[in-house]
Length: 453
Image (cartoon, rainbow, N blue to C red; front, top):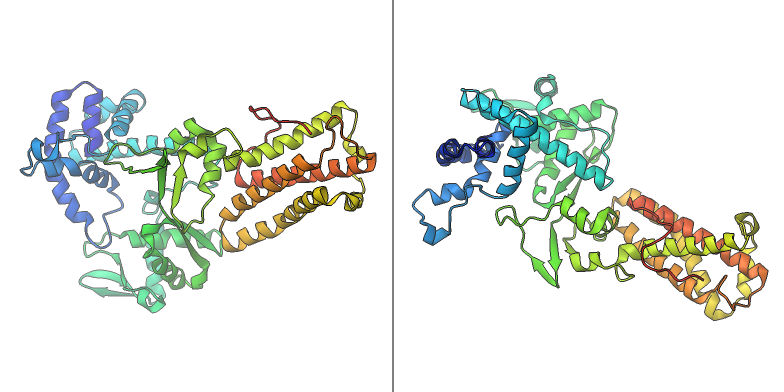
């Protein structure tokens, strides 16, 4: 809120007003930092002040006796300032940013600025995820829990079940009865609900919509939430296993063989939009799914940029495009799927060992797909699909290279030709299914030249 006010003044060309807001921020930071250091976090109704504190943490440090020679020039934008500067300019253009600054009450003004900024940020997130083919059925705003009465009803349910007690003028929940490491405050001594209360209300909302298994995808630094969320489920009358937490490790970027230290404070954070523009959604999705969620991911940008079989994501797509090329050539020779769709595949058993080996290897990989899908569904470990896709593509490329079908000069019987076409078509179907499950396209053609069989 306060930080966005600073950028709004700048966007309007009001430098003096911006400097005045900036000068006032360090004192605000000190107050809000203490507030946010409390065990249960800040009031959910004032998230804009958290942005204000974090954005100007560096400015606060420079204001307490550190000279520019000791710290470098003070960075008024805090971290990731350019993003917020651009956001302020958009607010001026589309959200009446100038009018937002006319509100004389500081708290109301910053709350309004925070809401306007939040609307634009959510809009950006939705657009980014749409480009990356990530879909959500429901977008739920935590701020709606209070006005809707769900916060109050969630706390009432805990009271009615006998899981609460009062201590130090606050209302606590006996989460230790359900395996948590400590009891949690649900209502502060001032009567304000905590973030834990929001967790209770939202989980109650999910159960109320008929779901009996809730999967929470969190960052690795939220390990402490596992016991907390399971205790909430039990306090609401559901088994602990109905709340499952999947923790994702950090992603680091590797360029030219070296890890790149990134961060908002460093001003060099790479956004998902930038990856999209650089390498596209297909390769980005594949690389993100190449490692188990509990293993840190080193995103090799040089490898992701390669337009060759060295790029594991493209290798799977190349295999599909190769199959499509052979089938187009078959159609040009008036060979239809009706002719090879029911071909006797057993004739391939008489192929020479140097060919039969690769035909059987491709068949074995295709038969694994059902097993892989079931494994992912049970373990929630989608990285098995990318590994399988690479194995399937490798098997297909070897089949393609060693078992010619329509290549000029190839001398094989019509029965073998039709059987190999049927096998190739089945391999293409398995590749397409794998790519679709990963969320990638299954191209009929690739930009690079694909040799024909």
